[in-house]
Length: 556
Image (cartoon, rainbow, N blue to C red; front, top):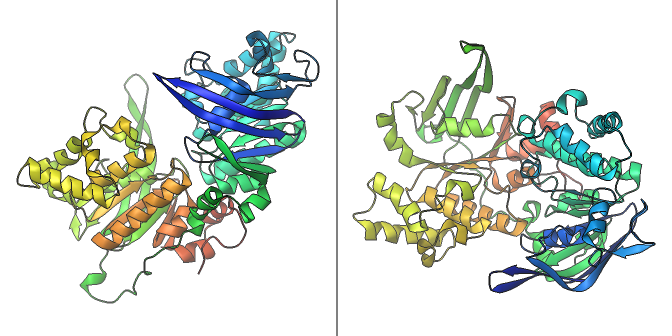
């Protein structure tokens, strides 16, 4: 037994209140084993992991009960298993990095922006391997970067975090956690924000490193597809307690606790779509699409030299032809950097197109001046990926919803606009009292509903949904997707749904388009594209999707 957690209790001080974040959690991990913890946000998963590695702030966190015992083969303090909760802080520091490593959820906030990534990895060696001289430490740093698949490690080691992609930053975090070859690796949502292809590479890398070094993993996730690929045993947490535990295959196939069944039933592949398929298109004016893109381009100049001359172009969107049928949902998929978000913003003229044409309801809007574009602003809206950053923290929800109505002349007076705002909030399943609160007082799912309400108050015909469910728990995601489907049916909305989650595409989309390097490489009905993809890139995306069971992604 490498790690044994026994009746762990973790209480966090929050002002005058005490939050019982972890209540009586017990589990054990053997060498070479992966133990997965799943549950919704706030269930206590991350607090459990931070309690194991003892990174919670001592003035805030305390452990009124329990033990966390670790057996370290690298000469840790004492003989046999040591209790990390009672160990002196100096001994804990020696264990962190050498015997225990941790991959944090967001590498951009975990890596120091003012130091090159190679120096940050070498610092771990300086602390935990003082026997290595500078040259040996640097050599090990480069070897660690090469081991996690970073190309040209000698060059990349001198780059700063912001110069690397999300997948590369995550690989740097893995290299930093693995450079001292720890016995236990704690991975806290290591693939949440990654594209499916990059996620597949990261997960395979972690499995390879585990097999090579024989380490144990405590793997935290809310993605059951990832858990099915990575885990040996699974624990399901809810409100600080472990409500179910067992082998991964058994828990996923035959969940015993109602909460586990609820989570699995909320996966997009298990949701039942209560909406008829797209009707067959008929000849006549009514079959004209609401939106047409003809050779749309968005290029950004690359300037160099003293005179800042243009030496190249970044082709973010490069000649896209697309039609979105009226009243239907088009899913736009592809990896980060392929141009999905830029395309959505260009359609709304939030980004200026550099070529091509945008036809909305038969009107060419690609080159309209701002004054002529204003009537179309009301008919075309966007729901942003991160509502926490797109909602003004200084404005109440009432102000956020009524201000756009006032700009477009909707409502006779403030009372009429407030009444309309309350009606829209009811449509997204939020009470009227929501109007008088601020964004920080809501959960992530509630803020996303407010973002949806803000787009709906102008009664638009077309909405761009930019990764609106990427950071949500599966149950909250299911609720938001259900709201979008019902609103599409009730209001006759047309949606461009930007995502990298193929499971969501399967449930939500009528038609889909696949983007790569600024171009649409494949498009068509969702079932046709997912069942019989024609382009190699689409095949690559579909094969990288982690899911609980086998079989086709799209069911008949």
